[in-house]
Image (cartoon, rainbow, N blue to C red; front, side, top):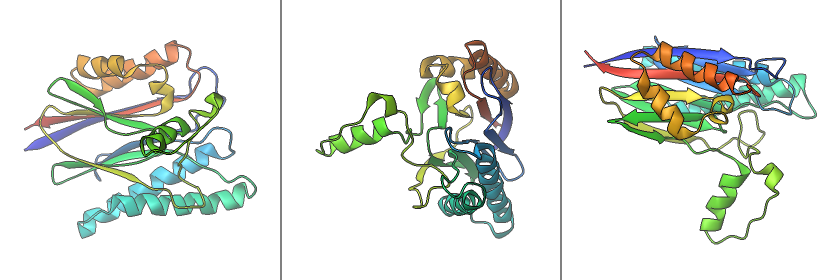
Length: 240
């Protein structure tokens, strides 16, 4: 039998005037994740807040009927954010990343849109479980299929998918059976741009509890300049 410990922390950083990240830690619904309002568009905070609220509502409803279609829940969040964007920013819309994980039947189901990330550690092996939906990565995948793709270096980190876009985004779905000793972290790019994957993995495994790990990781991202909001959610899986 497995038990779950989780902790979350967000920090505005040292440059931004508003925190447009939102964290999701719903231990009753076994739902965890982060959303990061898209920079350059208005309403980033509103988009992120609505996205996490929408998915959380779906996960809580699932507790009653016993089946959660996480992909459908994320697509519903996209529609809601799109509708809100038409109200508060008709010309540009609003958008957010969304990377969430829901635990059902000792399995972690991750739904991912954008460039927030989820990592997992098992038996000392730390790995990125999600792939950023960026111009650079999209070009790499299309080149692997034989297409000729060019992009400007300045745009390599621009998003190719987000919550709130007019065309429903493709949702990456990752399924991972849980084991005792697993550790997972969901984080916005305000963390991942400041800490390389190797260092993030060391810090996640360094501490015995998720609260201390998250505080060390987020605070380090801020100390290194904090150019963006920094948000992380850690989930530790234990045996009972």
